[in-house]
Length: 245
Length: 347
Image 1 (cartoon, one colour):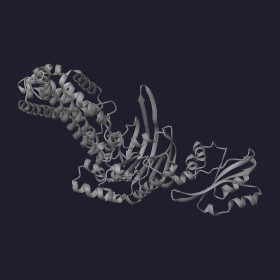
Image 2 (cartoon, chains in turn green, blue):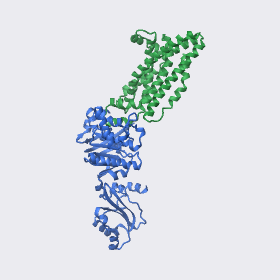
Image 3 (cartoon, one colour):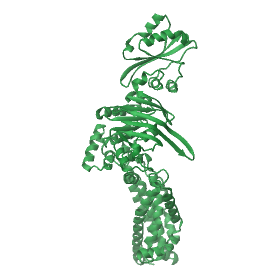
Image 4 (cartoon, helix red, strand yellow):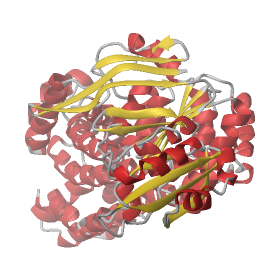
């Protein structure tokens, strides 16, 4: 396969990946953020303590997270058709990607929000602030660097998942690596794809780290959590997942 | 200004009950600085947190500025609109400052005003005014992490004052600060109390705090208030643990066959040469074990621990003489020696 043959293929694949991951991240953040906050708020001893709601959300999140993505995609087909009118293509892939990422992101949000010093919540309560004020002015802004790091992690995970979206004809970099590189023995193309994925993920991780660290530095807090470093080491692994799936 | 009656707080966890407050009756007058002192676990924190209902009392009532707050509290941990409105008129400062690290100093001070729904212009005017009052006008754009502990607490105080409260609650506000900074923060609280007529309820485990700023004090032990009153009343109360702790005198007895007494001088009595008079009149040898003069609640006060030869029964007359001179006499070993004195002496 010559470069002139590969180029349009790769270009289209890049766009497909960005399109899918972009939309599904947006939906995951919009859906996962309130869910994660709710997981914290409804917990025992918290502002909206509600054991039933907490347990139900927690269980739903656990079940959704334990489902392998490819099975989730199949299981959601009826729902996907209802939303997008089709089960094939980029739009159809966004639905399971987003739904798979919402509980993932929600757990990360939960962890990030739990880290917020309870004293700050009390201070705002003592000022006469209500729960909504506490969420808006304390929980979210105070955990913002962690939330950005969580979003980065989610994007990286979604790029990995999106490789499987090829099975519903959604295209994308992972799909190219599997179909052309792995199944048609175009080893060169496969490695180029993997390299592009590695670069894309590095860039995203770098941008995420930079933003999170920027916020940390502005408010003069200690540097970014070491987990970001650990995640970086995993990058080739994520690309490999794309290949193997 | 602040009245609690029969305030009781019981924590339940895993079937065990812990009584943090056991029927606390507290009365803080308008415009005074009231200190509640006690060791950790005595219930001070629960008490102050019950005053603005951050903690729901199990029983009893809290009245602040004539409003029964316990009646405003609904069921469950959420605060209703009326309780929130009442809280916005009670300022609170915390041991660990509790400033939002994502906001600048000025934005931190503006936060209560945002909650009150004030306009942006009014907020920034008020915030800058308050920062000026606490001496941090030139740090408005800094982030809390760039400030020292004392500066952070000043921001905390400015923030607590944003809603023009009549009452300020201070939850161990100086406990995380060094002695020098503690003094300056206490000085600030004193100034605010005098300038703004602010009623301050503070809790602390440091006797120095009570000594330097409080008009009144209460001693808490195991969820109960065991002593309370104005500082001068307390000092005039024989056998008062708080008085002894506020103003400890060291020195131990040399033998069994002697009587040790604490002599407390107030005001004019301090100028009389009582010891030499005593020695001359009764022809006894007096050894001074310890003595100190200090300013408590803005008043000069002296205290001396002296040893008289012979048992208490032999010294009834000289002690009577000292009492006649208007001195306050506490005979050691007669009443139980309070724990706080021992602690104070050991340090």
